[in-house]
Image (cartoon, rainbow, N blue to C red; front, side):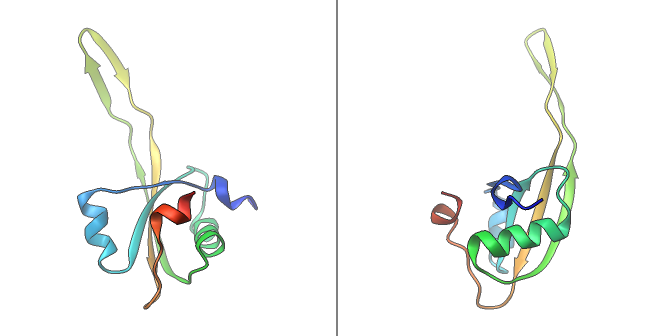
Length: 96
């Protein structure tokens, strides 16, 4: 995987992720086939920062009911990226 723009899909902005951001960490939705090494290289290349660690988790899709219709949300992969001390990502400018 050499096209780094396709690895990181979007930043995740929730209450839990903003608390993680206090420790110079960021949370991204990534493609399911991405490895920790791919994610590290993508963040370092796209945002010009140094990554300390990457943790990933698979988020299982939920079953949802709307009226009488029952559907299934798709599963996806989440990456917790912690940066080295003094590093920072400007999320709005970085993802454009």
